[in-house]
Structure formats: C-alpha cells, structure tokens
Length: 168
Picture 1 (cartoon, rainbow, N blue to C red):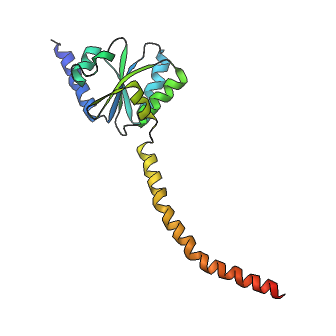
Picture 2 (picture 1 turned 60 degrees about the vertical axis):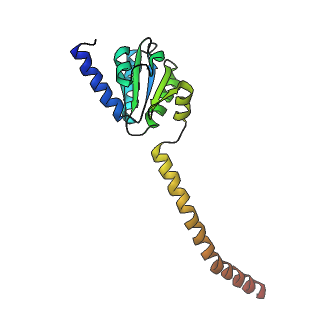
Picture 3 (picture 1 turned 120 degrees about the vertical axis):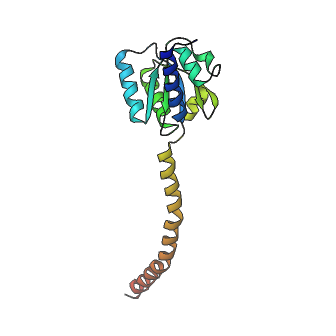
C-alpha cells in the first residue's frame, strides 16, 4: 500500500497522463545531467514534459499491468500535451543525436505502443505540418483555375503579337 505522499504523486501523474495526447517510457540510465537538461528543454519547447518517477508509481498511474514489462531500470515518462507527434519527434531527434536513451514502450488513446510503433509515430507530420499541407492542397485548384482563365487572353495577346511580327 503506497503511503500518502506516493498516492499524491500517483494522482498528479494520472492527471498529467490523462491530459497527454501520447507518452513514451524511456530508460535514461546512459544520460548525463546535461543530457537530461537538454532533453527536458527540447521536449518542453515542443509542448511536452519529461517526468522521472518510481516505476511502481508510473505503473499505478497508467494502469496496473499495461506497461509493466518496460518498467525496469531508470525510467522517465515523456508526455506530449499539445500534439501527439511533436514531443515524440524531439525525443527521437535527441535519441538519434546522443544515442543514450532506450525508448521502450508508449501509450496513446488507451493503446500500448511498441518501440517500433513509437518510432513510426515520430515520422508522421505534426498537426501544424498537416494544416499547411491541407492549405496548399486547397489553394492549388484555385491557382490552376486562375491560370486557365488567364490563358485565353494571354494566348490571344501572343497570337496577335506573332501576327504583328510576321507582318513586319
């Protein structure tokens, strides 16, 4: 039975996990203090948070038994609040640069994700990237229509110019 202080920590973790769009369990045992500060800063800028807590408290907060297999060693939770992908992208970017983390498992929409599924998630475009892609797609037909409408008068001008040049 957890003590009162640990129960409060579990409640705080539950609230943060409920707010998060996605999360990843990461073994940070190979990182230095400077690496951890850098990772926390990058994740924070991406609208996420890195939390270090006892494995048993993490297990209780997520749901007993859901991620138990990956809760061995020195673990942290990387939470992504604003967008399910952005903080995970930053995590994999840091992992690629430093190669000091072990990304174990993830959790999103009540589904446990393997390390490979988290990596695939990190390769997806972010919400802002998707919005800009949509806007570009919506603008292309309008741009094409404008070019078609201008083409008639432009071609007429070129034809008249060609006749005028031929007559000289």
